[in-house]
Structures are given as structure tokens and as C-alpha cells.
Image (cartoon, rainbow, N blue to C red; front, side, top):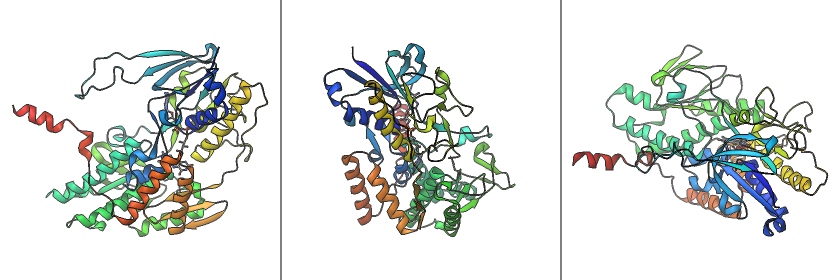
Length: 451
Ligand SMILES: Cc1cc2nc3c(=O)[nH]c(=O)nc-3n(C[C@H](O)[C@H](O)[C@H](O)COP(=O)(O)OP(=O)(O)OC[C@H]3O[C@@H](n4cnc5c(N)ncnc54)[C@H](O)[C@@H]3O)c2cc1C
């Protein structure tokens, strides 16, 4: 009987692990001796470090995702959400997409009931990643948006440009001020890059709005600790704060968001103002589906992993990435940080260890010393620290692009990303809001109502 490997999550760890299994177990897959199933609500893997550039219009959103069915032709891709795992019985429950909560063409309920499938498997690879870590702040759930998915990146691009349209068209000074106020909470990779790229885009767009000067906009970065971008080191983080401030961006350290009810922002330092945009990027937490499994979890709700990327004390189960507490052998006593650098490398070791376990061979431990990080702060601006070498400005930005181009999976994606960047080099970026795609039936409903 064919062995069945179930991969939960087709993100960094899931997709790269499946690619590794495709490469190493080609013969077994061809002969039908092995079956791989990847379960993910999305049909694509998102290259998250490119989301800020997609939001800023430097990259076509479709080019920052990798279609799973195209790159994994021998795997079964099941689009759905794992809702429960009983590993003791080697069974997983999947709520298939298009169930009760799916919207019909008309945006109403489809009337379909949720379809749940129960899958049996032999080997589990558990890597459903993380979700935004939110706090019970009044108004946050209603007014805020995260920055983890390609949908959020596209939405924010349209939203920011739509705010400029509102500001340029209204005669109400308060409304204009609110539209031109943008708040980002959280000074890690996602928050700083998203803010810097979107501010850069909005600044460029002001050229086409005769009644909006870049200085009319108010961009705010709110960070609870006393530093930002810990990934590039404290001094480069301090340099980034100054670079952002010189661009007119208000960077508030050791400050908390207290409330955002009705888009009225209240900060812990007593400042209050209205903002049309609130982006929450204050960290991530392991996917809560971990609690619907019989896998062991730690006090931070991460799946307990061994250095070999197996689940601690459990046979035939592997884990890695943002969901897992992986011992950091390069930094004893610590766990590896939730980032793409570890996720990609862990996937390689994990894939090899799945192969080794299927062949009854010795598993290898995962060990990688953090190489540093690169971050983009808008067109031609960046900050980086790689193997202790600090870079800033154009050089860091160039390193950011070169590094990520080398990392983005498949030749097809590399070519498309290069083409996007080359076009952006010769032509100005498009600064039109297509927010209407989030309300596709508005015009039709209006027409239908008139009759
Ligand atoms: C905007 C942004 C920028 C970033 N930039 C960098 C950077 O420059 N450098 C860096 O090192 N890291 C960066 N990161 C972090 C990096 O992207 C993550 O650490 C990495 O994606 C983790 O990989 P993963 O496989 O654990 O999770 P993911 O890649 O998030 O994959 C998890 C997958 O599981 C799926 N899933 C979720 N729930 C279920 C379920 N119930 N059932 C089935 N599937 C499910 C999801 O749809 C997703 O496809 C960035 C993150 C963000 C958000």
C-alpha cells in the first residue's frame, strides 16, 4: 500500500517540503508507492517578504504567489482548512473551501452546508504557520487590518490611494485630515516595510493631486518597545528610526495603541486623532489550529519540536516554521525565530528527514546560524545587516532585491519579478485605486434597483 504523507499548510515550510519530497522520492511518486497531499485554504504559497512591494505597486500581486498545483504536479492539493487532527489514529478533518460560509456570485450565502472530509495518513507534516497577534483594544477588530496576506496587501494599496481621492475631493477639512492620516502599529519587518513602501507610493502619487502636498499626509509608526526592526540589529534599527523621521514619518517608541473606536486613535502618551487607515502588524502567534490536535504544545501554543524537526515524543509527525518551537542549536537554550530564513532551511532538513524515516535511516538535526536581514524602506531605500556587515540606503535596497530574487521560488517567478522591476525602472508606477474590485456588484445592483 502507498504511504500517505499529509502536509498541513502550503506556505514556506509546506511547499518547500513538498518540493523536496518531489525531488527525492520521484521514483516512488511515479510508481504510486507514495502519495503526498497538501491541504491549504489557498491554492498558492505567498512569498510574504514581497508583500510590501506588491502593496506599493512595484510588483504585480500575482507574481508574489506561487501556484501549488503548478509546482507540485505529483501532489494532491486539497483546498480547505484543517479543523482537527487525531494523530493517534492518523486522521485529519478538512473543511473544504466553498462550504456554508462561501459567498455565491451575488455575494449572498451560497446555501451550501460545510463539507468536511476525513483524511487518513501515515506521516504528518504540520506547518500551518502563524496568525496576527491581536489585543483586546476597543475598535481594533472593526477598524484595523493586518498585513500577512496578498489580499490585505492589495486591499491596502487600493485603500491608501482611495484615501488620497477622498482628501482631494472633499470640502470637509476634518474628513480630509482623517483620510490623510495613516497609522501602523508594530515596528517589525512587516510594519516598517509596509509603512515605508506605502508612504513612498503615496508620496509619488501626490504628484497627480494638485491640492495634496506630501507634507499634508501624516504617517505614524507606533511601537511598544524602545526600538524597531530588531532583525537588523539595534544600531541599524536606530538609524531606520532617524531615516523615517527625516521623511516626515512620526515614529513613536514605547507607545501603545489604547483605542481605535470609530477610527479615533488614542495613544498611551495621551495623543488623540482620527485616522482613515489603521494597520496592525504587532507580531504573530502560532496558528490556533494547534489546539485542535493531539500534538504536544508549549506555553506559547507552539508545537514542541525536536532538533530533527519531529514532533516531540510522537512517531510519524514532523513540524517546523512559525507554528513550531524548534530548538536553536546555533544559539543553545533558545528557539529559532519565526522567519522565512529558518522556514526555508527547516523545510529542506524536514523533507530529507521524512525521506530518511521512510527508508529507516538516521535523521539529521537542523542547525543554522541566523545570517542577518534585509529590509526595503521604499524605492532605492533600505537597511540591512548580513553576517555582521551593516548596509543602508541604496546598497541595502539593492541587497534586499538581489537576496529575495535569489530566494523567490521557481524560474518563472524570478523572471516575472525581474520584468516588473525592469518596467518600474523605465515607467512611473500606476497610482490608481481599483478598490471597486472589492465591491464588484455595486454598479449592477444600482442599475437593477433603478428598473
Ligand atoms: C509582510 C511580511 C514580510 C515578511 N518579511 C520577511 C523577511 O523579509 N524575511 C524573513 O525571514 N521573514 C519574513 N517574514 C516572515 C515569514 O514570511 C514567515 O516566517 C514564514 O512565512 C513562515 O513560514 P510557515 O511555513 O511557517 O508559514 P506560512 O508561510 O505562513 O504558511 C502557512 C500556511 O498554512 C496555511 N494554513 C493556515 N491555517 C491552515 C489550516 N487550518 N489548514 C491548512 N492550512 C492552513 C496558510 O494558508 C499558509 O499557506 C515576513 C512576514 C510577513 C507577513
